[in-house]
Image (cartoon, rainbow, N blue to C red):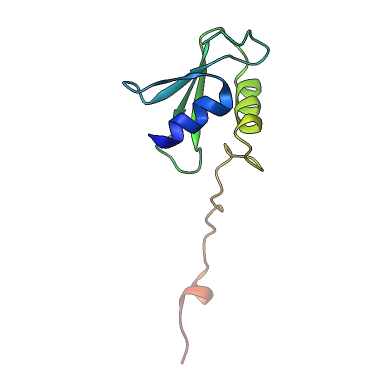
Length: 95
């Protein structure tokens, strides 16, 4: 849960330990506002999930959180390469 404390500090919010999330101001909101929840994602490719109780655009929330946490590059785009089908010549080992 130490990372939640760090997230709360960086995002200007509070940790909700019962729900394993940070409640913080959404993009462009007052510093006292707690309309955005940021939760660690179960999927390591996503890193975090945002939910705006104020109806803010998901892309704005993600961009704001990414910038405030000081993360470089896109966090929310899966980094898996598409699997391609191998034809028989690639799968068969010839001696």
